[in-house]
Every structure is written in C-alpha cells, then in structure tokens.
Image 1: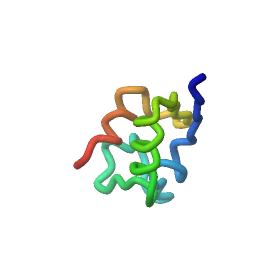
Image 2: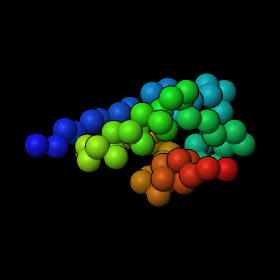
Image 3: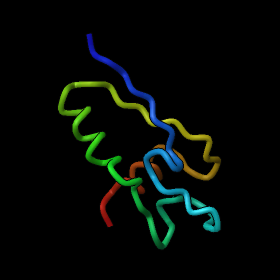
Image 4: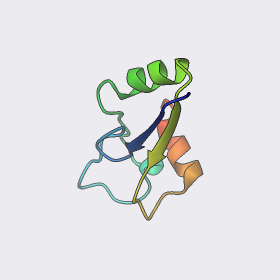
Length: 71
C-alpha cells in the first residue's frame, strides 16, 4: 500500500517571505525550505503519493507549479 503525505505550502516547502505580496511564482526571490526538495525527491522515488495544501488566495495550481520550477 502506498503512503500519502500532505505538505503545507508556506514555510513547510517554500519560504514565505512575510513582506512580499502577490503570487509566489511572481516574487523576485523564491526559495525552497532547506531540505524540502531532497525530501520530496526521496519520497517520490519510493512511490509515495505527495500532495501540497495551501490557503493562498492568490495562487492556483499552475502558479504553485511555477514557483517550484528552478529559476
């Protein structure tokens, strides 16, 4: 049976800079939390299901995917 993991977006996977407004994918600086990318890569290689949760009003699924892309 596959395990499923649910991660919060801001300050769990991605650094939420408190003085920055708007969609994270449009921010001048977008940064993953230390170790987050390696952890997600490890879990995904093991076939686990990974989900991202957010209460962000500004961003949709495509915006979140863009913020994960390397700059």
